Amino acid sequence: MIGLQLALDRPGLVRSLVLVEPAAAPTLIPPAAAADFGQFVRSVAATAAAGDLATAFDTFMRRICAEDYRTVLVDVLGADGLQQAERDCGFFFRDEGPAIREWSFSASDASRISQPVLLIQGGASPPLVHGIVAGLAEMLPSAEMTTVLGADHLLPLRDPGTLATIAAGFMGKHPISASI
Image (cartoon, rainbow, N blue to C red; front, side):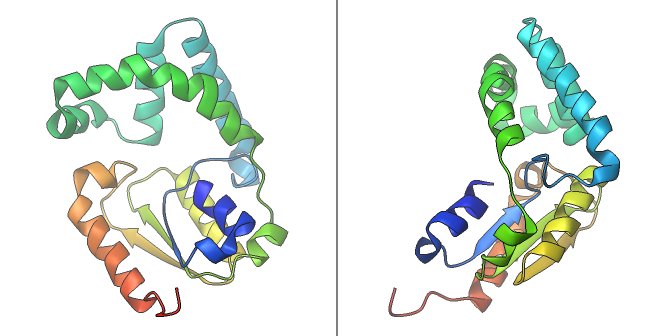
């Protein structure tokens, strides 16, 4: 969302965008999924607001990322990293969540983004994610879409090399000009 907003507000600073499973802002959620996802987010946010951060984190991560998210986080970040994520998730639910819900992006906004955009999604990610990525691909005039088979929302942690290779290949097709 930040990249898209920057491309709108300061297009001269953005050469291209690589977006990996963008956040579920309400204006990006497919209409058929909006009510269910909205209820899910309200429920998780209420759990976090009541002080049960561990349950809120677990519920959110299982639905958005993967059932085995704990194993992935421990393998990549260590047990302390998982514990810190659970402790610090209150900021996400309290501050970042509302910001995501307040952000708006329309087809008119998308038409103003002329930079090349690569949208990356995991083949094993939830249908909601696929709907968001497909919707953005339709709206953005210079968008390409790539699906990493078997991957999910934890792609940056599970397989950073593949993600880097895909991003580098895209950016190699859109090199920085000498005038920048």
